[in-house]
Length: 446
Image 1 (cartoon, helix red, strand yellow):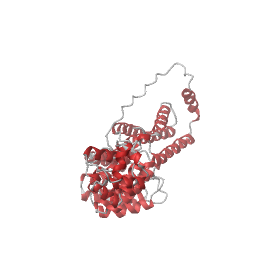
Image 2: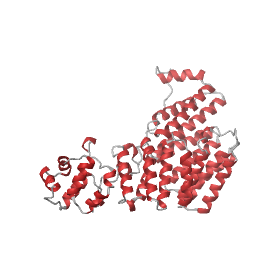
Image 3: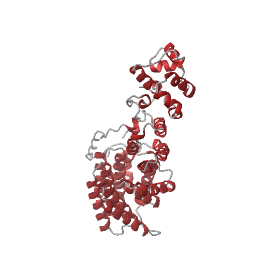
Image 4: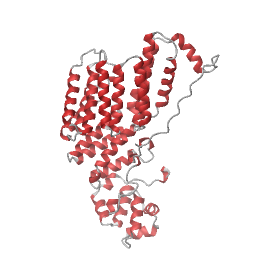
């Protein structure tokens, strides 16, 4: 349906008003129509058009001279005025679940592998050939730093807006760097290029993972492992395996998640100079895997290991740039989430709340994830008002980032809210949800 023709949502304050709730419950449409007119600015002629009634009939109802009793008419009123079905004693209407929450696990069509170019006898007169010729003599440590700086920028923008729009640029740079690896260069330059290519491949896999396109994500993560192996960067291999472990958690494959993070820890321990921050991050991923499996004691042990390693971090530790995100607020929020996965909501809530107060406000996706986790732990404790308030605040960062994983976290809270759908605070949350994440927001379909 075109946006211009889409029925207007009623204000949340009207849907939660006791007078409106009572009028709907007893099907007093005279009062319903008057409230819709005065509180929402929907006049009788508009009511008639939206509910497929004649203007004279609507006027008679408002004047108290006619009642509307037929079920098909009541359903047309619910759909035309966007009154949730339960308020009128109807089944849930098809439009009530925001399209942003309609989950269809999907995989994009497999992208064809780029055709391998057979070397021509002479370079073709195209820009790529000219650039390749130029870089044969000019590639230096400064060039490597420029690549690394662009990767850091990609990660920042991914946190703020999601990676969907960034992916073509990331893949283009990845293929360009892989092309550079085919030429003979000094070993330190070659190793640097392998590291950059591995991180670009991991970042590409991450954008597919965030879009819930798991086959493509795994393919790029695997490529990242192979590239890191070429330079024997075992810490980075551990990082990629940890990403794959997290993906397995989302795919509800906790046994795979545990196997992958165990392999990651093995790689990290076999590497020279693995830092405490890296080991702390890996222990927390292990805690996630155990928590998903319901292994309470093992989860608590892994959490303890994560904190023990974190306490050993020293000033000036040679941390890889890719692990710098794992700061104290991240450690705390992940600890809370691990407890939340075990159902230990009382322990989880204050940890997640504390981390939310302290973490970087530019990380829109992270703030949305963590706020929905906080709302879920509050709802687990029966704190309905707090949970809906927290989830409503989370909608702001959720609407700012194109991330289908965000939609998954939103849906989990939304499903958990099902027993409370008739409560005013839940109705207000749903109204705000439809306002900020309307059905046209296709970028948020999980």
